[in-house]
Length: 510
Image 1 (cartoon, helix red, strand yellow):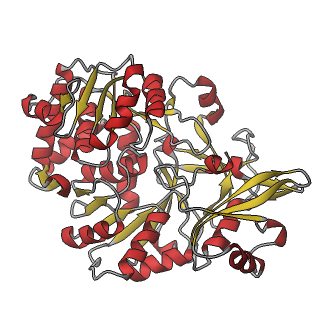
Image 2: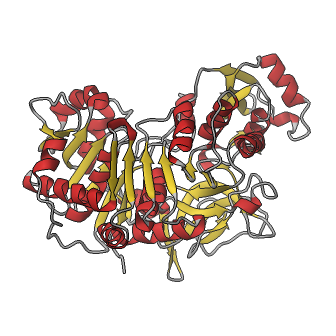
Image 3: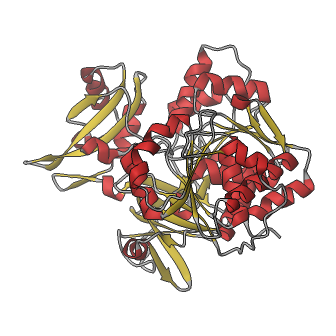
């Protein structure tokens, strides 16, 4: 039985040594599971030769690539703690996370070199820099050189199921990121749940277009597919047209994207002669799929979609909305995943104090994949994890309710709720109306301080419509009371987002 992440790879190699594991067109790489495993072993032993020991943190500042896949499994075999950083971070934010985690070794590339070098003078814990491209700086080791020289046999490190596998830093929708500590066992359990909920098979071909440093693409997609023996096509970064061509070229069956990315794919498909008939399932998360976008995707890309709801702290997937419910329960998050439970309580109340079905409250989730802790944040851990009757509950900070069928409906973030004139206003319902306008591509609603009402509703818009057109559209909508209507519209070329596609509203409010 697989109990550690390295075990899942070893068992897949035993069952399917000759099946495609990694396809990385950017470097013209195509590796079987046996070849992939050998590369992982070589890099793991090379890291050991650089002094990386069990428990040491290995950070990556990488775009998507085969190197990310090699690095995460190499860390798993060494018992090192994988610490992936957002490749868009500037030097100061890299410095913060590396210092907080105590990173020992950093793996980076040309496109992140400037930020890493900006941070380099202030990284006292870092003993090694490893570079994946040709122009290796003199202070760094060459990734492929290390891999070539490494011993191809499995490292002899004993890795236990309750060892820390990774520090995954939260993407910071509300402020400074925190390191979420996940164990091997919980991530193996998470893979099995995703395999079951999504029916991942060894015949699937997945395409990774969203960042592998984020837990959604990493834990649900890469880990689930490797555990099952499916193929993994990796794109360095997201380009809608290139992704559509890859679906056709590689007979991709399974794709994950945030709703904003699905919208971009559907729009791109309109003007392309591309065959996406191999897609059996579209998977999304981070937010409900707006009805217009869902219908466009069903019409232009594939028929069946599944949504997952969760967050880094729980794995990230703890709730799934199956394909058959996409239209009948459009807008809901779905039902608890296997071995998971949901409760709704008044914000901050104890887990035992459940409120009646249909009432809005804070969403609590319990399951086997919940984090151990926030690294070096005991007070934050205590606020987020509470035990009741032998079950540990995670306080999501999201507001929602359960309907009569037990489906979860996420209303909004607790911190995003707007109180105007004593009325509670949930931005999501306003954003849904805005998004239904044909000339609105993206929308985000926040509260601004107001002397008379406490807060007033304002909207940030990406699209070609004017403020007058949008306001008239909202005013005429039957879905929104007038007091919820935005009082101001701001237009932008794009909205700030975290890696999973969620808008970072605190940046708009700044």
